[in-house]
Image 1 (cartoon, one colour):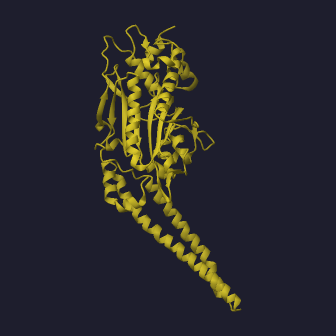
Image 2 (cartoon, one colour):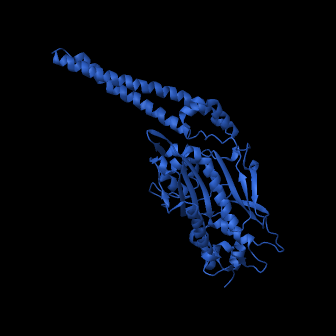
Image 3 (cartoon, one colour):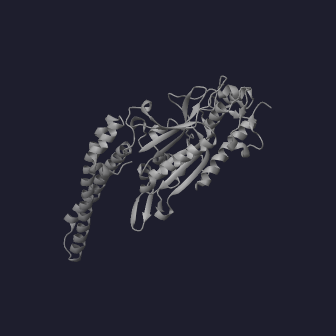
Length: 425
């Protein structure tokens, strides 16, 4: 959410930013907002005038009382004031809510380095890390491979919970837990504090973290309660600071969150009937940073580099794909995906997404920095460290053997209790 003063002083730039994001229908909202702001200021002034009049009338009535004079006329006039004030303040509050609604809709200002483009097809490859391995056999789909190794049961999960769920078995459970602990260890090594968040979040907190109206189709609602299952630990982790003032010397706050996540995954992508790539339930290790404005892009690079290091240690070939203007979510000022190589499809798929939201999210949540008498909004950033289901898919494809087994990356050996290969037992 942008500061209305910034919009007022930079209306042309804000409109251009909207056009670059191919959201031309929102351009008119800038003018609507500024018209509403003038009405709001007028009503704000009216409130002060009415309150001043009320105080003056009270003083006059008290004076006339002491002098023993008739005060019927003044009393009658004074009795109108509360209704005038109530009417004025009601209109003022209605306009305030309309202004906030528009402010929540206008996208954040993109960083000048963001490439221009209409949609995800015009995202830009910035870097490739690691060389894809050449296979002298046909790489098998991970779900088919896991069923042959008796390490997963998709059919039983479908009967119990429906499509998009799974039973992990045997050494695959160990691999999943190994990835979680591996991710935690690296993040703690990098100075992040480990936090396990609530797995549910209320609407107020969710709407502060993200555009709830857009996001509600993706998250599960608890019937009869103001609670939703979390889609990512980013949401409750950032919401932990809602309404807080943080001393500047305590920044940056670096958090690594570990949790299960739940998503409906309704939309064009759908879910996997059999597989781990896109499911309703998954484990994730998440990076969160709250920092001073001047440091946010340094942390952006740091968080992306951590993700690159994680998958480099796992020996998975990756690439960095920067989001173009048309594919950049409204709260984000800059974002990039880290993608893993799929030898089966000979293409890359998303495994992490780093985003700088500058102060757009902290304004929604009222997260401020306090430095002496100065107060300002913090900057917030997020990035996946490891989503274990997608990391497992990358390992299952890049480390499978001609014999139908899967080698465990060396970086995970110490977490696997002596297991160095996934095979049927």
